[in-house]
Amino acid sequence: MEDKQENRLLNIALYVMLFIILISCFGRLIDHSVYFAENALSMLVRIMERILSF
Image (cartoon, rainbow, N blue to C red; front, side):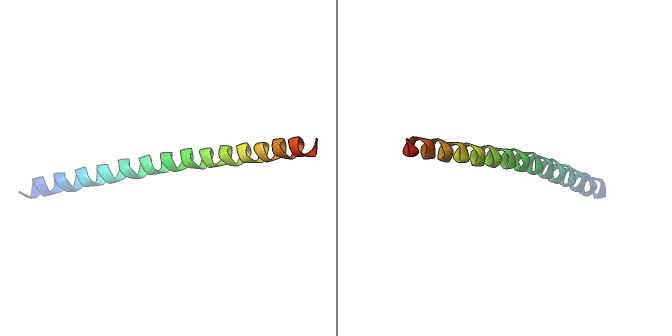
């Protein structure tokens, strides 16, 4: 009975670790995509300014 409880706790701990790792990986991806989106927006703004200036 105690062994089963310990196994369950170990499984929960493993799942929590995996969950945290996944969140950190997705967080990094989201940060990169936000960075790229900001760069793309600034590029679009520059292009629009050039088009409007002509």
